[in-house]
Length: 84
Ligand SMILES: [Zn+2]
Image 1: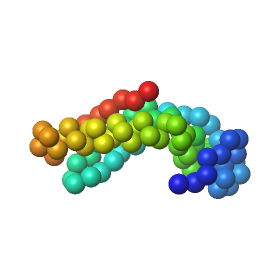
Image 2: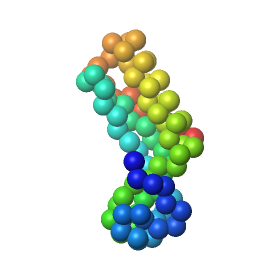
Image 3: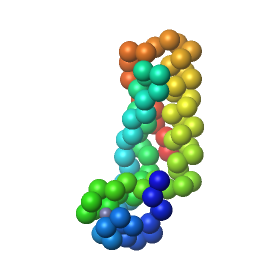
């Protein structure tokens, strides 16, 4: 993971914006989608940086959804979770 930039992209030096994004996670044939992840996205090259304090919460959310999916043996659907 790239170093978290404060003002400028560490990849290209472009300006960055705070955004809410979605991220898909795949594990054991199951896909879960986490919405509302706080991230910083470069306006120039599109590089995505995750805020360190937010990363743990959406990882926890993804893990919870995977556990739920495994428990329900639900491998064909997409689970959608919202954090924040
Ligand atoms: Zn950039």
